[in-house]
Length: 327
Image (cartoon, rainbow, N blue to C red; front, side, top):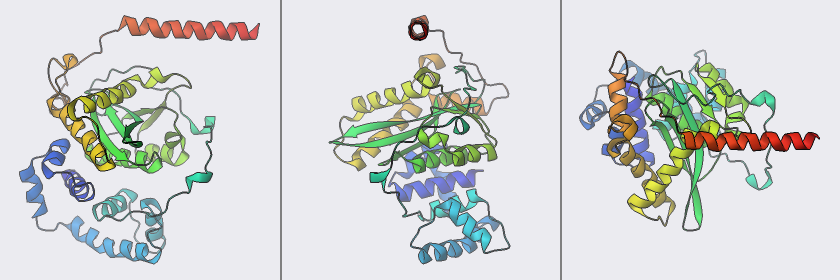
C-alpha cells in the first residue's frame, strides 16, 4: 500500500534530514503524490492510528522509552481487548520518532558462535538468477571508515534487478540495524515473500529474526561457514558502492557527511548507473518495467569461468588439506 511508502518518506525526511525529492525518487513515487497525501483528509486508519499514538506515548513516558516496537506491542495487547499488529505499532512509532533508549553495554559482551539450531540451510545454493522482482533477496552489512571512525551500512538487494530494496546506515552494527533494513524492505514491497539469503552473522542467526521472517512468509537461507561466495552478489555490490562513493564524493569527515555520501551514492546507482547486464538500463528502469509487465524480461548472469576456476581451486585445496589431516 502506498500509504506506508508515504509514511516511510515522512519518517525518514524528519529523522535523517534527507530531501523529499531524493526520498520520493528512492521510493518510486512522485513529489506531487506525496504532498497530496500530506494534505489529505484523515482516513479511517489515520484516525485509528491517532487514537493509538497517545497510548504508545503514555507507555514511553512512563518507562523513559524503554520499549522498542515489539515490547510496546506486547504492552498494548496486555492492557487492551484490542490486539494490535506489531507492524502497525512499528510504523506509528517510527513515523512519530518514538524509539527505545535502551542499549546493551557492549563493554562486557562476548562473541557467541551460532549453533545449528539458529542457522538455516543454504537454500539459495549460489543460484543468483531470479525470474522476477521480490523472489530472491540477499543481505549483508559492511563498514565504512571516515576520519578515524566508522559507520555500518546494511543492505537488502533484490537479485533480479540488483535493486537495493532496503538501505540503512548506523553508527552501530547491531540487531536494530538489521531489523530496520528488513522493515524498510517489506514496507516498500508490500506482499513480497522472497527467499532472504545472508551470511551467519549474529544479527541473522537470532531466533527472533528467524521467527519474524517465518511469520511474514519469507524463506531464510544462509551461507555455509567459510564460503563467502555463497553471498557473493551482495558482498561484491557493497564493495562496489564504497568504491563508487569515493569516486563520486571523496572522503567524509563526520558521521553525517559519511551517511549522506552513502545515501547519495545509492541514489546515483539506482537512477543513473547503466549496467551492461541490463542492456544499458539502470536498476530502477529494470525494476519498473518488470513490476508492470505480465512476463518480466530475463537478464541471466553470464558465466564467469575465471571466478569459477578460482573457487574450484579453493575447494580442491580444502579437500586436499582435509585428506592430509585425516592421514
